[in-house]
Each structure stands twice: as structure tokens, then as C-alpha cells.
Image (cartoon, rainbow, N blue to C red):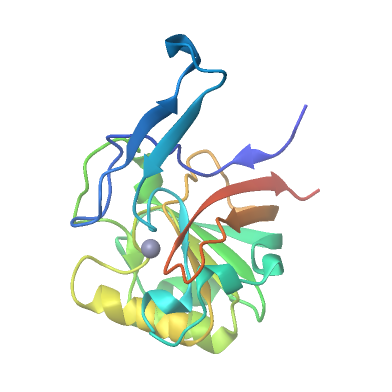
Length: 210
Ligand SMILES: [Zn+2]
């Protein structure tokens, strides 16, 4: 029995996405039921579909692309923080958790209580710019959150991204953290290696550290 827990979304047509991003399209190219030797499909989707990583290139033209992400960014120990009672997560909410140099932090918020199939909503839990600055100053290596964006839907959501990505953090968005309690885990998270990719859909999993 595997003790790994999948914390990534299934990619499927009709799944919710950020306003303006493309719908997922999945269509057969070869189909056994139609007499072909095997099943092959064509998928069309945005680079920020489902559970995905934002690389620096998402906000900085000269920044590293998803293809250049060091593998060990997404592989290793991580800590899940449970912050369920606030939408605008600020530095004062993170400070008591003492973010550490080199840490991977996953934030389980009230977003995890939603049905992952529900349509986009503007009022989701996110990091404020001062929270992003606190993580950057602490030297955190990766931060993940359980909604489509780490920053708010308002203009300061862009500032949150610029502060994190500008400081060299890698950001995972749209994690599925319902049922994942706060604590220490091992994490695996590997994005598709899309050349010059400004985002990379990924499979992510955690396993409790004993
Ligand atoms: Zn993104």
C-alpha cells in the first residue's frame, strides 16, 4: 500500500480556470473503439492548467522557464501549514510559523473546503505582498497554495507574484490539500518540461514523515 497522497487536480475538459485562460480540450486522435490499434489523444490547455508551477518567467521576461527548474526544488521535505480562518494571509499570519531558509511550504487554507469543480471565484485565500516579502526574506525555496493563484484577484496579486518569483521562489498553485493535516511531509512535485514554459502543469504528492 502506497502512503503517498496525491495533491494534484485531475485535468479534464470543463475544469475551472483563471478568467481569460483557455479551456481544456481533450479529443481522440486514434481510438481503439474506432478500429485503430491504440488510443491516442490530443490535449489543448493553458500552461497554468490545474495544479501547476509558476517559474520566474511567468512575471519576468528574462527569468528561468519551467524547463530550467532544478528537480530538487520539488523533491524533498516540506511543511504543511493550516491557515483556515483568513482570506488575506499576511506576514503577521505567517510569522508565528517561522518560515525557514530553504524550506518548502504548502499552505492549506479555506480554499481546500471548496468543491474543486466549482466555477472561478474572486474571493479566495491568498498571500498579501507583505506575506510574500516575509517568505522571500526568510529564504523559503518553494511555496504552494490551494487555489489558482498565490496572489489575490486584485492588482496586488501581481505584486505578490513579482515578490516571490523575483526572489527566486518557485510557486505551486491549485494544490488539493483537503484532508492534509498540518505537519512535516516528504514531497514530490514535477512539472512538465515545456521549453520556454511560463508555467508547468505538475503531478504532486506528499507522504507523512515519521
Ligand atoms: Zn500560475
